[in-house]
Amino acid sequence: MAQPAKVDPMYQFTIKPFAGTEGWEIAGYNIAFTNSALWMGITFVALLVFVLGGMKRELVPGRWQMAVESFTGFIDDMLEANVGKEGRKYVPYIFSLFMFILFANLLGLLPLGLVGVHPFTFTSHFTVTGVLAIISFAIVLIVGFWKHGFHFFSLFVPQGTPWPMIPIIFPIELVSFLVRPFSLALRLFVAMMAGHVLLEVLSSFVIDGTNAGALWGTVVGLPSFLLMIGICALEILVAGIQAYVFALLSSLYINDAENLH
Amino acid sequence: MPQIAQIADTYSSQIFWLLIFFGLVFFVIGRGMVPKVMATVAQRDSQIASDLAAAQAARDQADVEEEAWRKRENENRAAAQALVGDAKAKANADSEKKLAAAQKRIDKKLDEAETRINASRDEAMGEIQSVAAEAAQDIVQRLAGVKVTAASAKSAVKEAMTNV
Image (cartoon, rainbow over all chains, first blue to last red; front, top):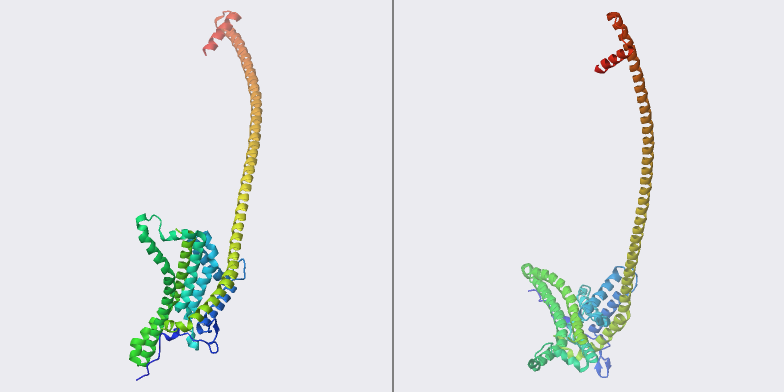
């Protein structure tokens, strides 16, 4: 009997500190430089290189400049459509958010396992997506209370609500508002983790099926492999969509804070 | 699930490094570079808009000039046509006058010729009458031996000739 492959679909999410950094601490909190932190750094560098390519500031843009400008234009249009003219000042934040998540998702999908390096998708950790969601939510709260003061609470009473309904509507709206950061964080984390787990499970089917002989290789291994190819394409799509959804919802929430109703 | 199993050990490092790198992304790329990229786009857009406006202005100018040229051209053409018409009318009148004068001269000549012809005819007629009268007198004297006065012969000849 062939030896069963030791594919643990969850192993890819393990955080491993680099040797010598396990003990790093600030005020008693461990800040070891982990593989997760490394990929955050790689994401930053890749994004920096990408945007630097668009900094030639030519009047007639080349392809690279065009690509960068189409991303900034995309975020600019999205904020203009959802928030309006005041939305332009959030372009740096939403652009950073969108591109950081997008690059992280895409870099995590790179087939670097072929050369022995293991990409790490830090957006599949809710500690990370949670922090990003909290930052977005904090911006909404700060902007909302800064601009509207306590009037911001009228966000929880939709316009035209009959007054007897207000005591019922208010808590419902409040809860739906407070749930936002969790839904924002969980959506990205779950989507990224599910995709990576699915790919890993299918890859274990391919390996185990092939090891079990030609028959099982054809019946299980081959279809799983074909499915993997399709799901890889789907995952690239999901990487883009989740980054877009995160940025879009952030801008919608910011719109609530900017314009109330 | 390492995300939960490791959370106690790793949350601080995750949050710390995320804040570091996302902060770098935000301040270096988002705040530092994106506005420049967008400024380039805005500059290009305004450049295109101003170029378009300039082109539009030039086109309007050309239209105006063409309109003016067309007007001038039309005026010139009208003036030329008036000149031609004038000359034609003058020439017409001239030739008409000349024709009329020539006609008059011809008419006069015809009249003169006619009167001359008439006079000649009358003269010839008179001569014929007198000759005929003398002949009649002569014939009557020879045939009948009657002497007819010249006057009566003349009147008889006249009568006969008008009956012809």
